[in-house]
Image (cartoon, rainbow, N blue to C red):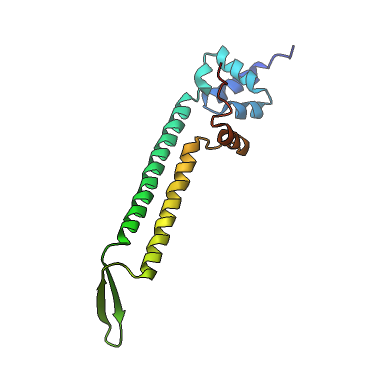
Length: 166
């Protein structure tokens, strides 16, 4: 059985607990185990000092908020892609500024010229790729999962932590 801690050391640990220091930091500072710090907190009715449920809830809320913003951005990429593709077959006005007198000239076309279509298609494709990348990111639900876990999800169609059917 390990030797008891000196009352002064217990008091110093308890003071750090009440000051709101993290449990593992207190353990390192005083050369004791994290379990010892937890026991001292419990013995002194300070067991809630290390409760991080509020932090966990706030982190979950922030994660959900970020997912909502990503979904909205992804949708904007998809909408922009569709607008660009629609513009491929709409009337198009080509214009220029210049010349010695810095004049403005324009000409209307029933559709954009080939170079303008190529630019619109490229921009639409990039927007669509960004949309798809975001969809893949959020569809996996595996933010932070290891490559092996993501591979297993892809191969098995379920999470590796999912229980097999009974």
